[in-house]
View 1 (cartoon, rainbow, N blue to C red):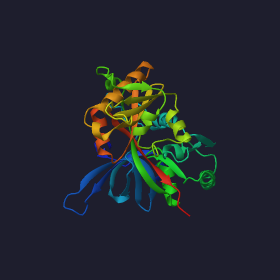
View 2 (tube, one colour):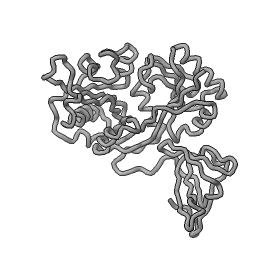
View 3 (spheres, rainbow, N blue to C red):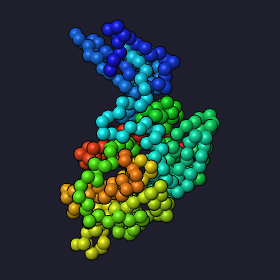
View 4 (spheres, helix red, strand yellow):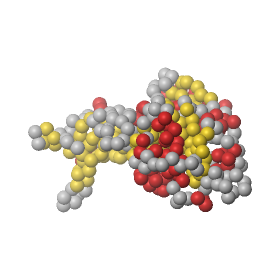
Length: 335
């Protein structure tokens, strides 16, 4: 990170830059014989009492003493593009991911979208705060609480780490708590399909009983109508199944889901039965789904994974995916 002008370190940010993306260099270990420089990049969410609050792209909140800051500047919100990784800002990926996992019912509140699907996944049962709600925040939160209470659901708001950093600060001050941290990852689509076609993988347009039998979110072997609406919703949805002919109950060896939306293909529900793991079936499923998405004109891929799911992250690393942004949910305080 370049902080200098004429070879001198400069602090070029002030409290008026709260809400901007900044890069700050600070001196740590100042009490030691030799301090160390630390660089922090993220949204400046606060600057009070001589302390800066910065929310990083991975969702971690960092506090920096103003006295320890040796350089700082405002930087563009969209980071430089990495080779082989689709270029897209957070707002674009958040929007396409929401279209690919649509709720059974929704309501607009200014620039917010309230989503519900009978409790099937937090994504389909939370507020997507893409813009201003059109009301004072406390009034908007009251509307949110009432709408979800009518449906017997907790009030949740989905926040992207940097994109909604200021909103998160406001919600946390009101007692909302964070849960279910996840990461959206993106990658090029074509390399996923760069292998011989695998005839074991069957593609279909609906989540049939065989597919559902392996899906970990199915309750007692079935899905509610709202859950089916979510899974089958989206611009163009494909399901993949690898049958297991040895199983008499019809449970497949592997499954997956992909939704195609313009240049994007979103992957979800990629699961492999325990008896068939480490046989490359997850790769085979994603390859055939990618082939279908390429035929519809898609070129970029995205998926969402829990932050602590190390095996899944390792698999997606080998398939060329990279972290795009972190997100989590903020849940309203309980009465």
